[in-house]
Length: 258
Ligand SMILES: NC(=O)c1ccc[n+]([C@@H]2O[C@H](COP(=O)([O-])OP(=O)(O)OC[C@H]3O[C@@H](n4cnc5c(N)ncnc54)[C@H](OP(=O)(O)O)[C@@H]3O)[C@@H](O)[C@H]2O)c1
Image (tube, rainbow, N blue to C red):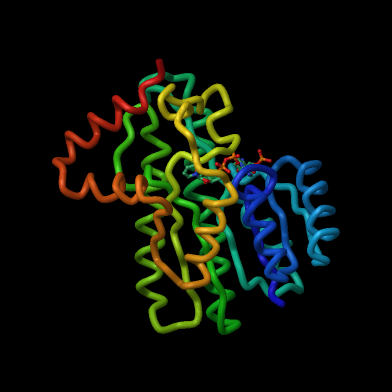
């Protein structure tokens, strides 16, 4: 069975994707910065599903590290599934100078590293005659996000890139899918700089497992874009019929920290 490479496998959605890949029989490569968490997950997956695992600690805010990850992961291994899941955001005004560190990291991880890995994977998958890429975007990709401007822009990029490459790959045995979850119960909003509006984190949020399962299924079906959940589908559709300025204004009000 082909290997599955999952980025951001130390927490949240990434852990669930790794478990789903292993449950389907894939040997799994786990990548993120927190090596201890990855090692513990690798041991769990081995015990639970009897699959081979490989842990590659990596900081994806460095594009050269993303290249290293692919080189190490693919050395002597056929990678049939790439789950481009690692990502982070920052809540705060773009005009705040202090926010730049996390905004820059968001840009690098969510857009640059994702593209490096997708590029390497798609080239290899076309040459080997098959493969699947799952890019984790967000409903944030459908709207500009005042207070989370860089994060929303990176997710819009992921959506655009996925749709374009999916079209290029039409009729080939290689598929690329963008999963667009709305707010989900993970560590995402726990970092001080990512903590979001009160209403957002107080709502009953879907579990990481249910969202990852929806994404995994969409990837297996070769869907180009998948928005899980009726509320998220609605919030992805609504901006298409409203004036863009109004969309930005309303989104900014919703994202405002209180
Ligand atoms: N939770 C939500 O509400 C939500 C909604 C829509 C989309 N998403 C997207 O879903 C994806 C997964 O997020 P999550 O909700 O599961 O959040 P999470 O629990 O915070 O997990 C984020 C993962 O990304 C990894 N990561 C962050 N910075 C990294 C870096 N510099 N290098 C390598 N790995 C890095 C983290 O690992 P380390 O810290 O170990 O490096 C962690 O495993 C992200 O792309 C996010 O944008 C989340």
